[in-house]
Length: 95
Ligand SMILES: [Zn+2]
Ligand SMILES: [Zn+2]
Picture (cartoon, rainbow, N blue to C red):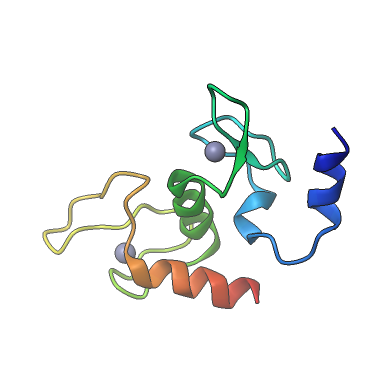
């Protein structure tokens, strides 16, 4: 598919695409796909969360890059559930 090449050359895709997707198994720099139809879609939320978690520390709960967010009670949040401000932090880090 020449489409894949296109994607790599096209500026402006999400920086999370430089990582593999834990949800659909897309490799780094490959777009996410729907499993049934194989249609390419915007990055899965799990991929965005993984990327933000690895890229940025969280301004909300003060964890280091790579560490899952914590709730106010100190419990680790699920890997795909991170504070909204962490996405912003990650985007600024990559900008
Ligand atoms: Zn995906
Ligand atoms: Zn957090």
